[in-house]
Image (tube, rainbow, N blue to C red; front, top):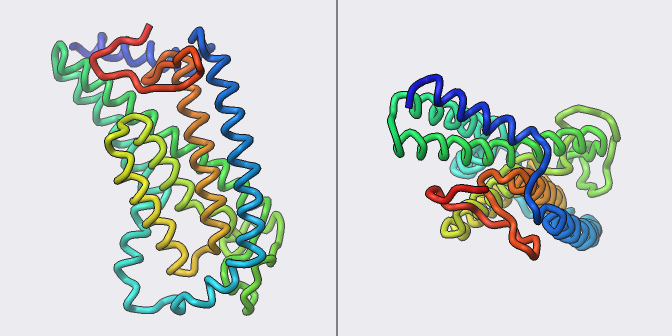
Length: 259
């Protein structure tokens, strides 16, 4: 596959990604997404209030002090959920796959371009909810554990836009759960491993006193809903995913073309 062919194929993919939706079952998928989002927000909101009222303060009191030297393994684990690191790897992987496809031929080049599309989906599934999370952090302005000196689950400074008041939602949890959902959507065989990964990142944020339990739950909700919306966006444009008559979104195998 030469450079001009690769660029033309990539350009068509980008045009479809940002073009109008075309899948015949997209309305059923949209209703399904809206229903799942409503349930997640409703039940998640109730759980968040319960955590704030009952669990948050007792939990952070049980955690070791910040800076405890023995927590170095947890600090390493938590970096695997850092948004900047995850998105950099996915973005670089997407670009590398496109470049490699330029020197390959035939089916090998097509498979590499297909990989670049899947990596682009993972990148956007993480980037979109992460951007939403950053806005929510600044607007909500919840203090991180022990900011102000005392453990207080209801310590807020809205529109502060500072790191100390950027606890809700957890950015690491957003990225980890968005990535877990997105990878599971593409390759269900990796689902258990990815949800374990997300769980470990969530626990690491609690142990390091970076967040309250409710912050982590909020991050999980934002990450999953955001990744679901990105998956719908791709499916509605016949990219990577397809939609069944009932609105269920399923991945398209690498060797299967999407109409």
